[in-house]
Image 1 (cartoon, rainbow, N blue to C red):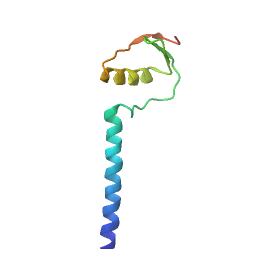
Image 2: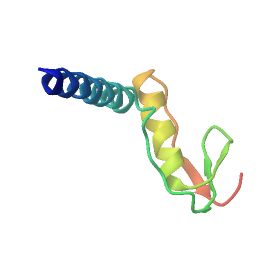
Image 3: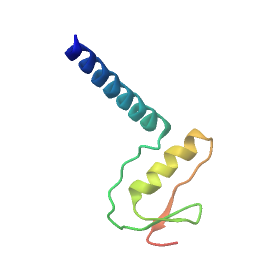
Length: 76
């Protein structure tokens, strides 16, 4: 019985972590990019560290009905 309780508590903990991770991905906040510095300029005039970071912002803005594109490679 003791082992069953421990197993059940561990299982609940894992499910909670998985559910939280799913919420991050659904909201776009879980966007994972490398830390390689390849600056790009967005049409919002902001320099992003790499194309992946710009893509994450694009997705987030798109959900809010806003739009941003790549203006050019390099800093703004």
